[in-house]
Image 1 (cartoon, rainbow, N blue to C red):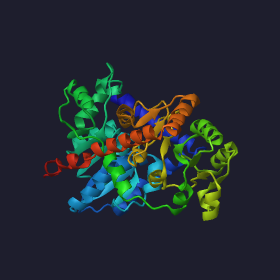
Image 2 (image 1 turned 45 degrees about the vertical axis):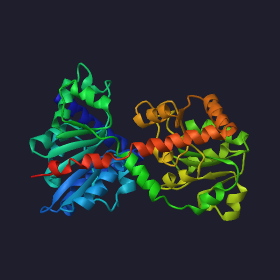
Image 3 (image 1 turned 90 degrees about the horizontal axis):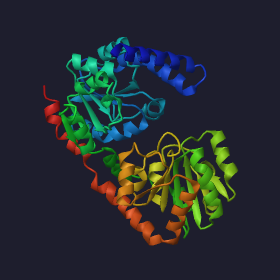
Image 4 (image 1 turned 90 degrees about the vertical axis):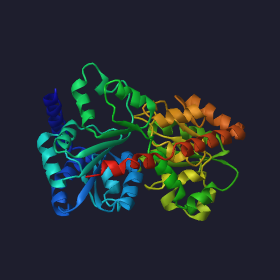
Length: 413
C-alpha cells in the first residue's frame, strides 16, 4: 500500500506540474518547491541544530507560532526551519523573523524526502495539526529524528481508523509524542495501541490572546464604527456568504457593515459593490469625512482582520458554505458573538463555541436573518453570548506551556 501511496503522490505532483500552466497557485507551488533545495544549500548552517516546523498553510502557521516564538526565547541553542506546503502560507510569511530559514516543503516522494532531509538535517521535527506525510515520517524515524505533532485532532472517520487504513496508521507510530487537543482523540488513539499521547489543547487560543493583546489601533475603522448602530464584521467572506449578508445589511439601516473578503482581487471587490444598495467605501480610499458618510467599509488589504474584530458587536466568519469556516477564535477573543455557516463540524472550537452559547451556526439566509434580528432586538442576549465567547477563549488558553513542559525531555541528547 505504501507503494500505491507513493505512486499517488507522483501523480499528484504531475497534476500540479500540468496545472501550473493555467493556475497561479499551482504555478507558485511548483516554482516554490523548485527553489527549496537552493534555499537550504545557501541558508542552512551545517554547524547548527535545527528544529524543523512544518505548517501546511497560514492557519497552521498561526497555530504553531506561539510555540516557535517561545522556543526561540527559551532555547536559543536551536535554529528554526519553517516550511509551508501552500502558497497562501509561504507568500504571506516568507519574511517571518521568527524563523531562520523558510521554504516550501517538497512533495512526499522518497527521492525528494531524502534530498530535503539531507540538506535540512533537522535535529527535531514538529508538524502542526493535520500533517501526516508517510514518507517524511518514516524517513525521520529511520534517521532517529524525534518528531512531534501539536494541536492534533483525531476522528473515527479518518483513514487511519478505517478497516483498510492499517498501513497508513503506521505514520502515527513515527511520532515521539502526539500532543492532541482533547480526550476523544486520546481515547481513539489508545484504542489502536497508540499511548504516547498528551492532551494539551489548541495553541490557537494562545495565539489569538496574543493577537488581542497586541492588536493594532486602526483609526479609520474606529471612526467608521462610532455611533449607535450595530457593527457587523464579516470576516473572510466568500460570495456564498455575501449573497445573504449584504441583502440583510441593505434592508437594515440600524446596522453598519465592515466586510473583509477572503479574496480581495478586483473582480471580487466589484462583485461586493454591485450587491450594495447603501453607501460604501473601500479602506484604501477612505478619509475621515467619507468614513462618517458611509455605511459599509470594505477592507481591501490583508493583515488587518484580527485587529478589526475589536470594533464589532457581532462577527460573521466566512467559509461555512464552502470548504469550511475560517478562524472563529480571532473574533471570539474580543467577547462578541460569532456566526458561521453549516460546515463547521471539523472545527472543534466552533462546536464548543456553540455549546457554550457564544457561537451560532446558520444554514440559510432565513436562519442568518433570524439570528441577526434577535441580536438587534435583544442587546442583553447579544452581550451574554459575546461574554460566553470571550470566556471560552480565556479558559482554553495555555496549550503552548503544556506542550513545552515536555520540552526539556524531548530535546535532551
